[in-house]
Amino acid sequence: MTTIAPTQHGKSLDWPKIGVIQPRLDGHGGVEKYGAFLIEALARRGPVDVISEHTVDPEAVARAFNLRLEGPRFLKDPRCNPPGSFAARGRLHAAYLRHQVRAGYEAVSRPYDLLIATVGTLPWRSAARRSVLICHFPVVRGQRVNPSISHSGLATLTSSAAREQRDIRSRLDSWNRIIANSEFSRYWMGQYWQRDAEVIHPPIEKTATPDLANKRNWIIAAGAFSRPAGHAGDPWSYKRQEVMIDAFKQLCDSGLRGWELHLAGHVLPPSPDMFAWVDELRDRAQGYPVVLHPSCPYSELEELYRLGSIFWHATGYGIDPEVYPEKTEHFGMVTVEAMGWGCVPVVVNLGGQPEIVEHGRSGFLWDTREQLQAHTRALAESSDQRKALAMGAVARSSHFGLDRFNQQVNRLLDEELALLHADRR
Image 1: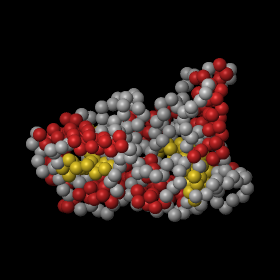
Image 2 (image 1 turned 120 degrees about the vertical axis):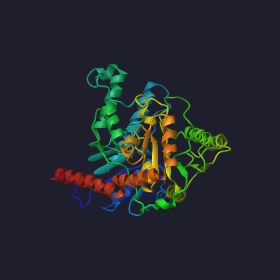
Image 3 (image 1 turned 90 degrees about the vertical axis):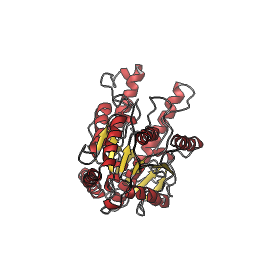
Image 4 (image 1 turned 90 degrees about the horizontal axis):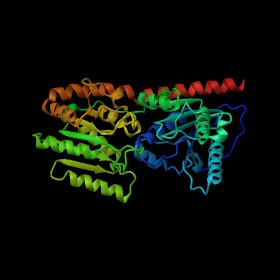
């Protein structure tokens, strides 16, 4: 792991200095998988620095995502993901700390001709020559552009709201280009930030043609095991495993026989409280054919996809999506992965899921638990319908394939390289 050395802008380079800010690359979530494949696509074209707040272990990345990153240079710099709140001793001290963090982020970004940040919310100001922000969702509720609040002139001296608006807008303005991971995220970026974005859907690896004749009567769900939020305003979603367990128990009680529910995912964070949550879910399912797969490696998840017939997803169920859109699934990579293996998706009609599933052609969308159960019961009773929708799911999944992702990343890079070249003339 090397430290960051500054370079001078403006000198002639055959290949510009490109950096990717990927704050974390040690877990198994969709944000990190997106970042890993983005880095791999960029590194095929030329040298790339990957800046994280921790030491990246390429072997751990390979185990998590079945992807070996051998080309990039990995740099450790905690300033790439500075804290959003400060233990300040008074207003002046808070302003000083904020200035230090802002200056640190700008120092990280300044050496680069092209900086790409793949993050979950609005980062600090970039000082690179060209800056591309790939945001998976504008999660932090306070970071919103409010057109009714002045952000210039005397107002910034007398109003804390005006100073905050000036900061938010200056941060946004430092990013030349914004990329969203879905049309759903793009819409909310427009609502929150008053900026348009382009969409590059996450990369989904294409599987071999699935063997639909080898499917078992399994319902699969994939997502992190994380205890539900303690209050409705908590910004992080969770996967609603308890809702799926209860829905499946009711199906069994009403006559469903010969089917199993398999819940797979990593325990995040891997803390005693989260492992206790897994135990609570296991107790909740006791007496029913429900199998939990915590800390599930990718090879085991692939085996579940290969044998599963139906895929469930319930993230965001029970919340008001207009009030808390961040608590829904912002895209749904696991849904597409399951579809590629011939699992028929029966997923909640929220977030990015409607972008993926064509209702009645490649799966089903549901709004109520009764609809979830009705669609599942119909699929369980008709192997012909399962096969037809499984074929539709496989075809639909190809729309989000890795080849298309790489093409879009290459196009993005070509356009940015052309702008850098034109700027040097």
